Amino acid sequence: MRENTFQTEADRLISDYLNTENQMNDITMLGHIVDEIIQYGDAVTNKAIISKLLHRIDTETDPIILDRYRTLLEQIVHKTQDDFVI
Image 1 (spheres, rainbow, N blue to C red):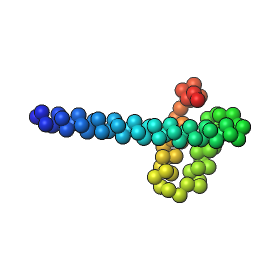
Image 2: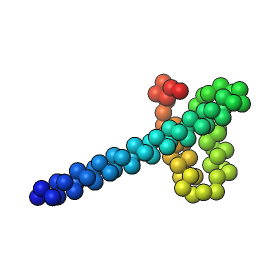
Image 3: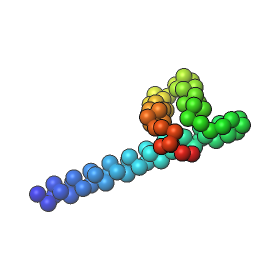
């Protein structure tokens, strides 16, 4: 019984680590998009972020990165302007 508890705890810790790593990568990806918007001299708005993400989705060929862009887009679309502050 004790071994089973340890395995469950280890699984949870690994899952938490991987989720945190993915979340940081999403934040990094979003940061790059925001930087690009700022470099072009545009205002950073949800519309601008969504537009950049859609462009990247249209041009990306790597299925793993494409999936990450889609996930990030989904997260942004489900946030309201009050929820998402940059």
